[in-house]
Image (tube, rainbow, N blue to C red; front, side):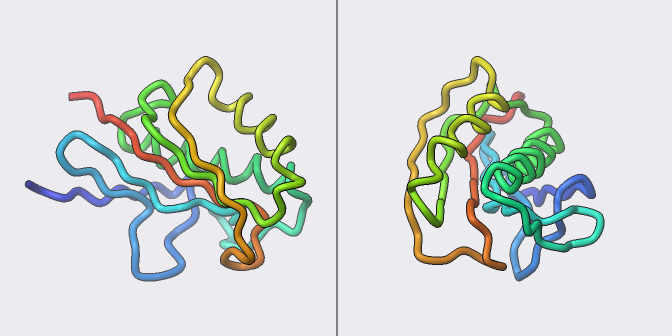
Length: 128
């Protein structure tokens, strides 16, 4: 069993001792993505819709770097600061996923890193 660390400049660099994603045994496990700009490392100060767009763009970059797409995503977890914003996050999420329908958990949390309003991670099947 060999772990392969995934890195792309199209998603923010890790802000701690972790990888953007790790593949093992045909699966990709991504780190949670928040609305950090990949180039500047700065957190978006926009509303939940803007942050969700950035999160999905960042997560897509990690998934793509591993050679996969949203059609290969088996499970996501959405962490949201305010469940009242869930319809907005869900709308953005659905647009990015297209026809893909991974399993999903959504959890309201009291706080996220850097004051983020939403964070999403994924478990993805990697094509052989």
